[in-house]
Image 1 (tube, rainbow, N blue to C red):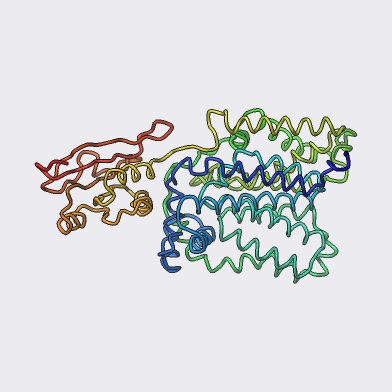
Image 2: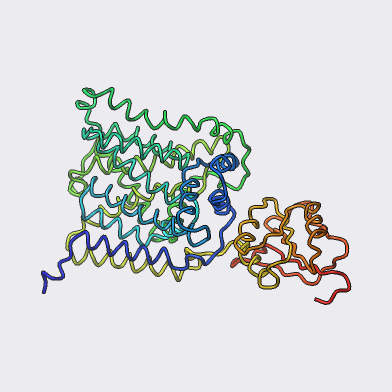
Length: 486
C-alpha cells in the first residue's frame, strides 16, 4: 500500500499543473477587459491585416510578439474575452513548466517541484495568467532564456542549446523591452558560472550565439526609437527605496510572505558577499555546493531591479510592478531551495502545506483578491444590448477602442466616435432611439460640460456604471425621438 501511494515527481508536477489550471480558470471573466487589454484585443481582431497590426503596435509602448500570437490564436480559435484569456492561461502554465526545467537544471527535481508548487498558488502569477497582456509570456521566456544561458555557460555548447538560446531570447526581446535587462542579468551572472576554459576555445561560437538575439531584434529598432521618443504619462511609480519590499509584497499580496521572501534573498546576497572574507559553518552547510547557483539567482534579482530603478531615478520612471514579474522566478527558486534544506520530511512538507494553505486563503479572503473589476466597458455594452441591440451608438472617449471592442462583441453595427458622422447614420436609418456611451475615466475634456445631441431627439434616461472599487467608469445615455412614445 505504501508503494502504491509513492507518487513520482512528475505526478506531483501534473497535480500542481491541474490545480494551477483550476485557479487560473476560476473567475476568468469576472472582469471585462481593461484599457491595456483592449489594445491587445484590438490588434488580435482576425479582421486585421498584419500590416495594420504593425501600424497599431507603433502606438503601443511594447514590442509586438504577444499581440501577434494573440492575433493568430484568434484566427485559429475564436475572438472574444474567454478565448483571449485562455491563451494567456496556457502561457501561464508554460511558465510553470519553464520554472520546473530551470529549477531542475540549477538544483534538482525536489527544489524544482517546490518552486512550481509555490508558483501554482502565487497571487501575481495567477493574476497575470488571466490578463490579456504579455506578462505571462515575459515570465515564461525569461526562464527559458536563463535555462539555455546556464547550459551554455557550463560548457554545454551544441546546436540545440545555441539555437534554443537565440530563438528564446529573440522572442523575449520582441515580447517586452525589459528583456534587455534579462540579458544584462545574464552578462553579470556570467562572471560567476562561466566555464572560461571551454568558452575561450569556442569564443566565436559564443559571440555569435549571444549577439544573435540583438542582431535579430535590430529589425524593430526603428519602431523602438519611436517608442522612446514618445512622451509617457506620469502613472508609473515614483522610485523609492522601500520598493524592494513593497514590490515583493505585491508579488505575494501579503506582508508576511513578502517579508520572508525579501529577507531570504537579501540574506543570501549578504552571506555570499561576506563569505569572501569570513566563513560561517552554518551558512557553509546551508549553501554547500550551490553557492554559484544562489549567486546567479541573487544577481538576477538584483540587477533586474537596479537597472530600471536607477534609470527611473534620473529620468522618466519605468517602475511598474507587472514589469518585474520576471523577478518571481529567482525569488521562488531561492525559497524552494531553503525549504528543501529543512531537515525532516514531515516538517518540510508541513511547512510547504502551511504556505500553500495560507496562500489559498489570501487568494480568496484577502480584501484584494486576484480577480478584480476595474472597468465597465463590457457591462455598459451588455446593458445597451438588453434595451435595443439595433440602436445606433455614439461613443465618446479619449480612446475609441475602449468601447469599440465590446460594441462589436454585442453585435452593434451602427456606431461612430464623432458626432458629425453619427448624425449621418441617424439621418440614414431614422431610428426611434440611440445611445451615447461616455467614458468617465477620464471624461474627455470637451464633453465635461455638455453632450452632443442630434436634433429631434431628447434624453430618456441615463445610467452611471461603477467598478468594484465604486469608481465611476462609464455613463449610458438613452435618447428618443421628441414626442415619440418609447
